[in-house]
Image (tube, rainbow, N blue to C red; front, side, top):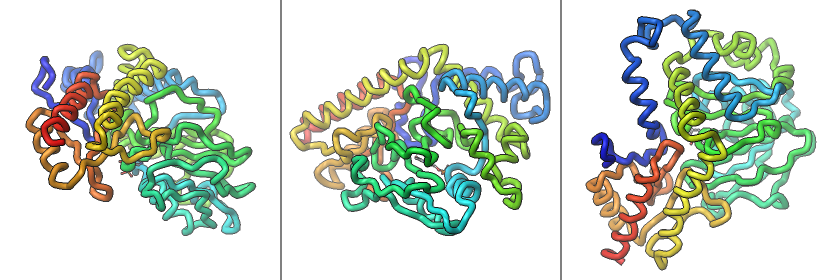
Length: 367
Ligand SMILES: Cc1ncc(COP(=O)(O)O)c(C=O)c1O
């Protein structure tokens, strides 16, 4: 438990812990936004007051990511589930075209599953043989020359696997699900055609999807698409094609402000995240096999630390004792089992230190 509140250390994979100062600001502004006199929940998405909120969130994202003029920020709804459909609908416009998908875990698999409804799917690599514990080497990729696009998931949240070095795709646009690692490190936006991130991990709360899109890709969107599914319509409407998730956009703005003003930007947060992850991986590596990490060492995620213990009984005991000690939501995803500690930007170092110490003590008692 932290000293100032009775909050637990919440290791949820998402929706996940938010910075406490953000929660406090939401609380203090809930009845009346300063200078507005109404709650953010009560104002029109077409009002000047919401203009200010939307512009603030957009410009903070631009500042954090050094957004080049070639790209723009959009806020959409529908999570990655909708993106999995919108990407092929907008960019795989000819049945004869191919989309390459690199499958490094459960989220990439879902993306691949939607593609063949619209055009040809090429699985450029699939890590299922090793239970998605690594990303491919460049030489293992079977990329299609002139593919409509190439998709990957930069951080596979369930398997705890991170794509540290993006593959070279020449002129083929790279579309990336960054739901669980956007804003966790500096980013070179110019390398991407499209980035999307369901906000409920590092970028705010559930309900909004932060997109960063290369403007020239909008030329591919076909006028015959259902309007809501057409990126260019959202772009023309400045993310207000219909009523956007106003509260979620407001929270994303506050999270970005926290990143800039309290955490000192993405280079600092990246160091902070690496330090936190090292604490846990060091315990795993020095446990003499009591804990085994799922991901191969060089592809380890610093957002989701996934590991197993010798038996399911021991894992249940671990989870129950951790909960009693104020560390919750450590159970691995139902498809993989084991333990998963999600340590996004907002997880304080004290939470990770507490977990690392708990792991050492637990191994000593039960090893
Ligand atoms: C990598 C990744 N993509 C997507 C999602 C979520 O997608 P959706 O918002 O459609 O539930 C998650 C987790 O919730 C995730 O970790």
